[in-house]
Every structure is written in C-alpha cells, then in structure tokens.
Amino acid sequence: MNSFKLALFNAKNNIKIFKLNIICMVFSIAVFFNFFSLIFNPSLDLAKSDKLLIKATLYMVSMLLVFFILFFILYSNSFFLKQRKKEIGIYTFMGVDNSKIGVAFAIEVVILGVISLILGLLSGMIFQKAFLMLLTKIASMDRVVTFYLSVNAIIITTVVFILIFSISALRGFMTILKSKLIDLLNAEKQEDKILKTRYLTGILSIVLIVIGYLYSRNIFTDTFVIDATIVIFCIILGTFLLFSSFLSLVIKFMINNKKILYDETNIISISNVAYRIRYNYRTLACITIIVAATITSIGATFSIQHLLKSTTKLTYPYSFSYVKGDSTLDEKVMDTINNSKHKVLLDIKTKYLIFNSQKNIEINKNYPVIKHSDFNKIITSLKVSNLNTIINSTKTLADGNAITVASSNDSGFKDNQALDLYGLNVKVKKTINAPLLGGRFENNTIVLTDNDYNKFKSNCYQLEQSEVEQIFQGILVSDQDNSLELSKQLSVIPELKENLNSYITYYTSYNELTGVVKFTGLFLGLVFMLSTASIMYMKIMSDAIADKKKYEILMKLGINESELYGAVSKQVGLSYILPILVGAMHSFVAIMVLQNFLNKYLEISLVLPYLFSLIIYVIVYILFYLLTTRKFIKLVTA
Image 1: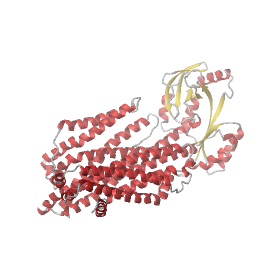
Image 2: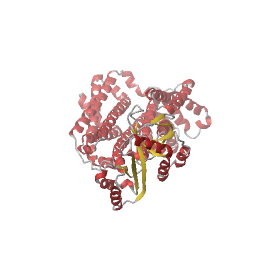
Image 3: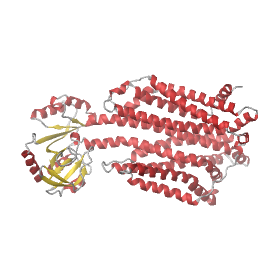
Image 4: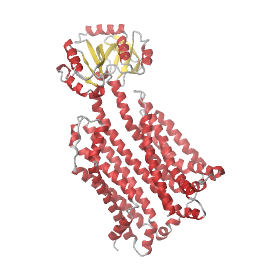
C-alpha cells in the first residue's frame, strides 16, 4: 500500500474522530469567505466616506481570523497525532519507513483540509444571503447589499487555507520523521506525575495579576504602548503561573482536606485533575487568555452601539438644527414638519457670536460664544441627565471668567487658561461635557457672563465683522429615530442645503460603520468561542483515553452509574470552569478600564455589553460541557 492509499484509508476510518474539528473549520472558512465576499461586493461601494474604513475593518478581522485558525488547526492536528502515536508505531514496527508514514499523514491532513475547504465554501455561498441580511439588520443599513459570488473571494480563501493545511501537514510530517519506535509504542504508557507544589511562584502568579489589574487603571496616557505591554505581560505570565503553580496549591489543599477529598466521588475527579495538570496547564492558560480576549472584544464591540448613542446625544441633541435666516425659512421648516408624522417637542432659538482664535491661539479655530443665561436655558430645556450638577458647578460664574462646553471633536481649553477675546480678557475656569449647540460647531462653545457677553459683542462690532450676532435654531421632534424621510424633505429647502444638521443623518451614517464592526466582531467571537471549546473538548477526550483503564478498574470494583457520572462531570467541569472563570475576571477588568476612560468624556456603562458577551460564552461552554461529559462516559465505559 503506497502513501496515498494509506492516507485515503486512514482519512475514511478517522472521519468520525475529526467530525467536530471539521465542523469548526467549515464554519471558520465560511465566515472568512463571506468577509472577503463583502470586501469585493460592489453593493458596498454605495457607502460614501466610510467605504474604506468598512473594508479595512473586514481586512483586519480576516487576517486575525487566519492567524487564529492556523493556531487552532496546528493544535488540533498535534492532538490527533498524539492520539495515534501507537498506530504509527505499529506501522514502523511492521517495517514501514517513517518518511512514508509521514507523507501518508501529511496527505491525510490535506485531504481532510480540502474536504473542509469545499464544505466551507459551499456553506458560505449557501448562507451568504442570510449573512448579508444579518449585516444590514445589525448595521441598520438603508440600502440593500445584494448577493454577489466573488471569484476573488473564492481564490483568496482557497489559497489561504491550502497554505494553512500545507503548513500543518509539513509540521506533522517532520514530527513523525523525528519519532523513535520505542516512544511511539509506549505512548500510552507514559506515566503522569503530580506537578510539584511551588509556593513562591503560586503567590507570584496572584501578585502579577493584581499588578496588571492595578496598573491598567491609568493605562490611557502618553505612554500607552509601554503601559499596555507591561499590563499584558503581567497578566499573561500571571495566568500561566496561576495554572502551573497556584492551581497545584489549591489541589494540594483539597487533597489534604479529607472532608473535601472523600466527599462522594471527589477522590476520583481530584486525583485525575492532579495527575493531568502537569501537561494541561499550558492549554488551560492559553484558553483562558483567548477567553478573556474574546469576551473583551465582543463586549467592547457591542458597547460601540451604546457609545454611538451617547455620543450622538451629546453631539446632536436636536433632531434638526440650523442658523436662522429670515422668517420665511422658519415657516418653511415648520410647514414641512407639520405635514409629516412627527411633532415638534422642543424649539430653541439662541443668539451667539463667533470668536476667531487666529490672533492669540496657535491653531486657527472658530469658537461660538453664548450668554450664561442662555446656557442655563438650553441645558434645562434639553433635560440633561446631570442637570443639577452642571448648574451648581457653573452658577457662580463671575465676570472675567468663562467656562467651555466640550464637543466630541475638540479637547477644549486648559483650566485657568487666559483668553483674549478681542480685548476682553477672561480666564477659563473649567470645561464641562454637555449637549448645547450640537454638531453645528466642531469646536468648544465659550460661555460668558451676560455682562461679559455684551462687552465682547461691542468689541466685535468695533472690528466691523459682518453678521456679528447670529441666531441658532434647534428643533427636537417626536420619533426622531425614524425621521430620515423628514430629514430628506428638509434638506431640499434651498436655504438648508448647506445649513442643516440632522441627528438621524449623522446617526445612520456612523451606525453603518459601527454596525459592520459589531457584525465582524460577533462572528469573530463565535469562531473563537467554537474553536476554544473544541480545543477543550479535544484536551478532555485525551484525558478520557488516558483515564480509560482507571475507570474500568473502578467499575470492576463496583462503582455505580451515578457515581461514575458524578466523578466524570466534576473532572470535566473543572476543566471548563477554570478558564472561563479566570478569563471572565480578566475581561471584566479590561471592560471596566475602558468604561472609566470613556466616562471622562461620556456617561456610559459597559456592564450590559460585558454580561451579554459572557452569557453567550457560558451558553456555548455549557453545551460543549454536556457533549464532552457524555462522550467521556461513553468512551470510558465502551
């Protein structure tokens, strides 16, 4: 039998063993193919300035997906190779050359890879319509992204995954080539030893993780790259030491505590975990890091929607705003609104002046200037969430002082910064975040006392500036989330073509971009979840094979079915619970750090997005836990 026939024979016989691995690869390939189909889909060309950002996001996510899939395939093939060492040893004992066996294994990997590739491409094509419908729903696109069979996407997907499978096949070939007959035949007889108890490194693991957590609290500074590197290093190293050393301390405590050890079937499950931890701690630590990264990325991805809504409310507190012209413009606007299904909830008119900073600030910017009394009137009318706090912090504003109201695009002035407003000298007391004139102006709004405002107005007149005082008009309508049609009707009014700021236009535009990010993050997270759960499944099945003889002896000694199930469920449960518990803790800290950073500019909570992503992960892990427990029992009782 030549290498090719041997590979076909093995692939056919082992297809059931590879079933879960193939399912994960098919799903990953289908997602990768659809990401690139979107990149080449001409329907996305309808997106204006966001087109490049959307495609760049898809490219980056696709590349990240490739690296993770490479890791997953290399790990899974390493697992399968380890389980088949005795089989390879028998072939060697029969006189088959190692190189021939290695070639057969490599061909087998490529065959199964090609099967996964074909099924993945077919699945991607079949479910592309559903994929696109989900994209338009999540991204709230007001356009139809049509089905498009991209030849480029097929070619790229094929080349990338053939390359991945080739790398995996070559790695397997080299491993078999270097194998020794005695090691292959005795692969299942290698004795597991309890990991040595290391108190110092066990305590160090907790110290490193705590240092990483504490250091991350002030990570968003000018030295972000260095600080982030320190945090990541401490947490990753601490996690590896946690599973290699601290976990051994916990297990030793449980073994020494007779009440815990002899409770029901704990002696079986704890003993098995104690003997396996020496070889499994690296896998558990890697999965923990991936779990933490996945929960954090999904949580952060879904928090984008919360962030967008909060930013929009701050930047665009009005449904529509414009600079007031003659009275006929107001009549046209009101007639258009009254003829729609929307009602006017708020109508604000505010006078303002423009301060050009070219003369006394490095960067040339135009800043709107308003009265303190008008400022109080606006934020009261807008029913700002922290209204009392803002009013109390600004009510003592005195002549010669100013406050600035931050916009999303301007970092504002420094506290106690002196300003020369065309001869009127004032000092900035503080900068606050509050909705005021909305997206009408890119830069901060300067708020002066009514007396200083009138002085500044006189100075402006002396400089003979045209249109010295202008009138800002802000209108809030009912059901503004569905006011896109009304926005289009208002935009055709000649005076508003270059003069209209619309909440729904801004929100829709940015929601498409954030929606694509959320969409790609969701699918990337699903791939990570399925793959890590599959790795856990393979690791535990490896333990089941190693523990089979132990359980056979226990059954001969009279252990009943319920006791067997209890022992297995605890052993399997520990392997699933530990990574998700530690990973959830890591991700919670990361999400809270991000939330604290964002709260400097916006009041936003990321707890719900975090809980949402954690619940998804827990559900997936519970399903895999039940599957693994069932398979474990079936294997050891066969």
